[in-house]
Length: 270
Image (cartoon, rainbow, N blue to C red; front, top):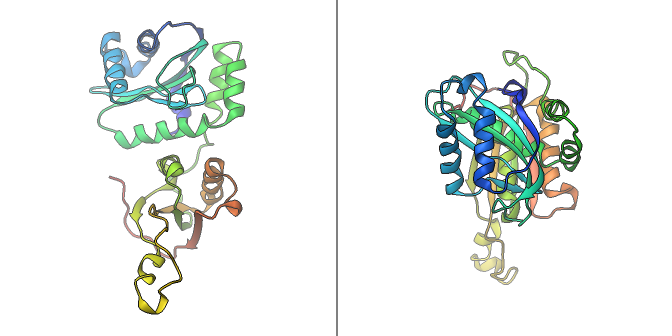
């Protein structure tokens, strides 16, 4: 499901001025309640679901952005929207910045994978400083809606059988791993898995023949993300990775390899 399929003009509001995170969540519940998938669900139910999720951990993700979200039984579909504040409020962000851009997602309990895809799409979109600035400058909800909905990818024929690649992302920098993992949360990157790994030096240093080449101060964080990706999305995936960690040519702790897949049978969609 694309982001543009879940956002409606009526779910976008700008220049709000709540004085607390609680009031903000109530504003979101009120705004979202008018959407068709939530027409039979009370504002209090929506607020309580958003509040309960926020109690688990803050949904603030830095740069003045938070993405409140929740799952509610018996919804008929997904609702996404955007609230822009006239003044930022405290939202327990890890970078201590006040939040003024609040995209949100509310969805049914029975489709967690789609929910994750929408959250990932929003998180990636709002990493763009240009997008954040443009939305902050929007003078009407219609303009803010257009800016956000235009971030969605053009429609694709998912029934088309295109070639696929096998991508390995080797990561030794723990500080960016969680953000890199979000790149692979979307449907477009198909089946992905994470593997823990040890450097070969950890084994070689214990072989007498190689003793003395390494000391014990070696990397301890090693992860490999393995993903099957359609050919036409490989470059975009690499760009998203470099958006997080900078040019790969300048990194000595992150590496990507991409290889052809001559045959793929089955899938990992659960």
